[in-house]
Image 1: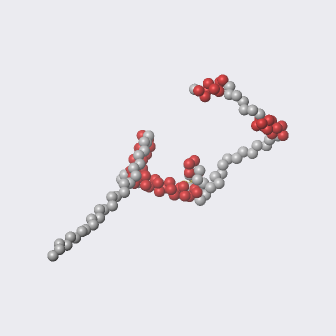
Image 2: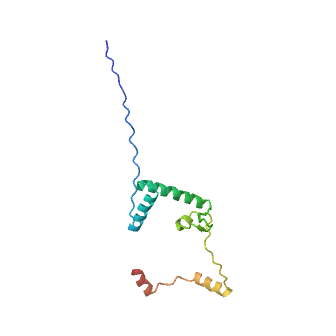
Length: 132
């Protein structure tokens, strides 16, 4: 009687995906701030801290993209608006400062002459300054 050979396929567990590593060089003051915030928020690891910080920043970016302002309000009703230059870059139609200049006819003609003329050669002093 023929011998029956039983084959089994052994499934190896999929290797867990390695989480990306993140490393940052912090100034001592920033390191102390992170440690203090971790303690205050009862966060056990830098990973937990970074996850919370990313969630907060992601929310802030989303709010500014929608044109919302991010405001803190005291118990007395005093309000302060959060303004971070990098965060403002995502705000729609960011209100950039504008200046209106009332040009005279003579000033416009002078500007036109300057725009049409050949570029000026740099002075020796400028060349020395650029070379350091």
